[in-house]
Image 1 (tube, rainbow, N blue to C red):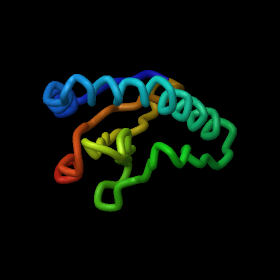
Image 2 (image 1 turned 180 degrees about the vertical axis):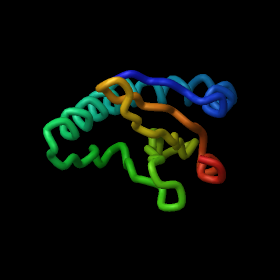
Image 3 (image 1 turned 180 degrees about the horizontal axis):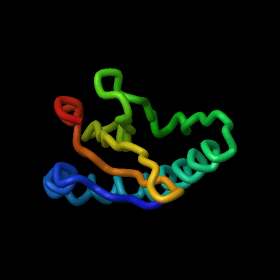
Image 4 (image 1 turned 120 degrees about the vertical axis):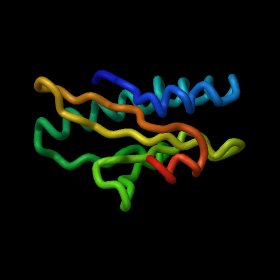
Length: 107
């Protein structure tokens, strides 16, 4: 799976403390990327997919097509929003926002 990011995400990520950014990257590499690959495989095989509970991935009710994942339960309460979009026969994960619960104001 390929990854892109919106301008909002790029602005948000610059505001993260270095240790929070490091934790986000660790979770993305260790858990999120493999989960996205498994999700993409399940779509192509038309099987249902259940995201790992540790990521708390959910679709936002007020913003269909946009999902959120929790990358930290401690300080800070780290959240990131994203969408999974088909492009050229594969899926692209577009990072939309990152931070705390404030990202839900304009996901």
